Amino acid sequence: MAAAVATRIAPQISLACALLLLSSLAKAEDRLQKHRDLRRRSGDSAESDPRGPLGTRIASKVAYYTDDDGLTVVTPIISVDQKIFDASSISLEYDADVLSAATVDVRTSATEKFEEVRHGMALAGTHRVLSWQTDLSAALSYSKEYDYESVTVGAGFAKELLQKNVTVGAGYSYVSNRVGRSHTPFGNFEEHLDIHAVNASFTQLLSKSAYLQLSGSVILARGYQASVYRYVPLFSEGSLDPSQLSETTLLDGTVRPLLRAPERLPRSRTRGAGVVRLNQQFPWRMVLAADYRLYADSWSLSSHTISVNLYQPIGSNVVLRLRNRFYLQTKADFYEREYYVSNTNAAPEFYTLDRELSAFWYDLVGLKASFRLPFRGIFERVEFDVKADLQFTAYSDFAYLSERTAVIFGGGLTVEL
Amino acid sequence: MRTLTAVWLMAGALGGCVTVQPWERGIHAGPCMAVVPDPEEAKLEQHLFAYREGSAGGYGDTGGGCGCN
Image (cartoon, rainbow over all chains, first blue to last red; front, side, top):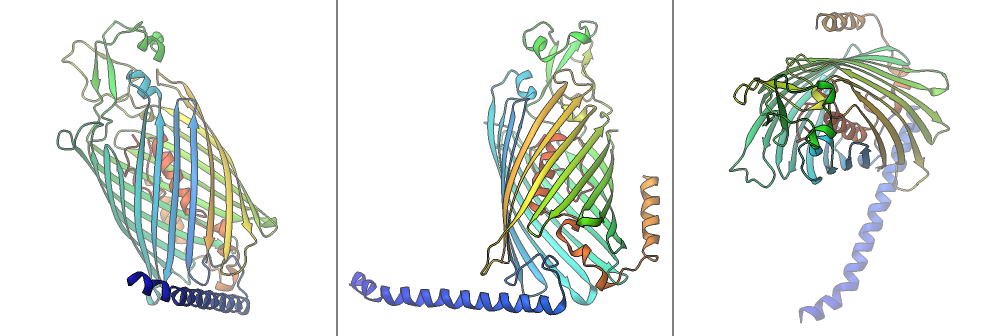
């Protein structure tokens, strides 16, 4: 009986759906035309408003990282951003890391190559209070790996001042991290790391074609900051010729530590960073976006980062980006190339095998091309991009790896409606 | 830190010196002039740099949120 009724009304339902779809497309076209007319009347450029008339932006990207130290990471991300009314927007985002590692960390621990996947979800919203010329924002995100869970909540504001020549902003984020161990239930092993981060920024227009931005962060991290998988070789005093220490001699037994102890790091870290950024457009629409970051923390680690991006539009549909990022850091105060102990009960207070706490530098060069595709209809903008980066890292004080070369490929599609 | 504070104060003073009128801001509206021209790429890269650097902060990041260590 039900089947017979369904068969009878199916054509009517199909017709109603088709009419509804046509009506929606017609309304979308109508809104698009009104939107374009409005822009034309106001003399606005097509690039000035990143959203289309429906206020929808959908972006997907994927990055592929691989290096000669045995690490491969594939990172997809997709986000949907929807304008709600005229003053608010909401966005939903999913990202993941698919990681395959046989790095020096893994090899010196004499363990097997491992693979893992991290999933992340984020929900964010912004609301513009027109009478205050202020944007309010809030975000919530969740990230999960089989041995790690993290929840981040944050809120912030950005306020325009002096006829919109100056924008000041500030935000606060709290990150709660739950650290576990592979093949071990959280009930048997569980550590925590709490992070409080405060960010502030000041942006000033310098001319019709340039602006300066200053931004800074203070981050307080309290809790477990070591790796549960990292065991540090501790050598008996006088038993080792430091020049002999390498990945090979450690693995083949030429050098023998007195013991291997689980990494121990301070449970408290206060981190501060300041960034100066300059954006300037030159003739032929070339844009220089350069920034310098100074970083220092309570572990006596400091770093300098210089990033330079050159954008060159070609015609109205292609933009090329050439970039360089140089990074230089000093070691943490407790980091040593090798640790010595007089006996098994005399380990130093802190010890690590983390090469990211040693002194090193890297340089990254890259090229990216973005193509605006000539789609019409309800699409306001469809853009496709591809990129390739090359990164070279030199470790001056890490016994088991002296240099690493990595390549990063990426691509993405962005649609605005 | 003192140097950074001085730079902040100097930039704050600039606020009273320069006025770009609304009709002169066409260039600033271009996508290449945005502070973050490609938010998804920026997020992926901050994640990558969290793996590869001992530093964090300054770009709106928090230095946490994954077992990247």
